[in-house]
Image (tube, helix red, strand yellow):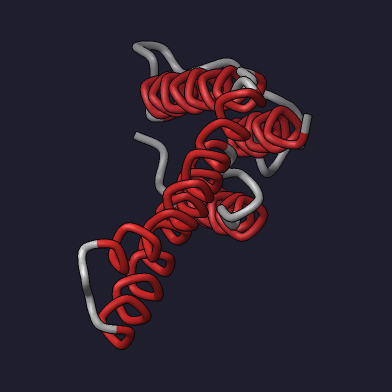
Length: 152
């Protein structure tokens, strides 16, 4: 919902950029297209690309990872980490070697499991609000710059 609102706001800012600053209403494009017609078309193309990216992200977000997958990998990981010290002791490894190998393996494998969980649902980690605010500021500057350009 929020990305759609942001895209709508950007479209609103683009239409404000098309308004005639003297009359305050939308003026028809000059004969031959004028400066605003190709600029507006390009902005609409970019907004369309953004909408497609948002739709793709929504599909990714709404595609559920089967809970059985996550629980299965966690169970296999725990089983491996529990049996690793037993296997190392059975081959005659020293206590220090067993402890170091178990701690190192646990750190690496639990970290990989946690990264996998973040990759399954990356959106809470991505700073979307800050990125959207930056995009809005850039669009507002572009609209202000369009007002200051001379009409050809």
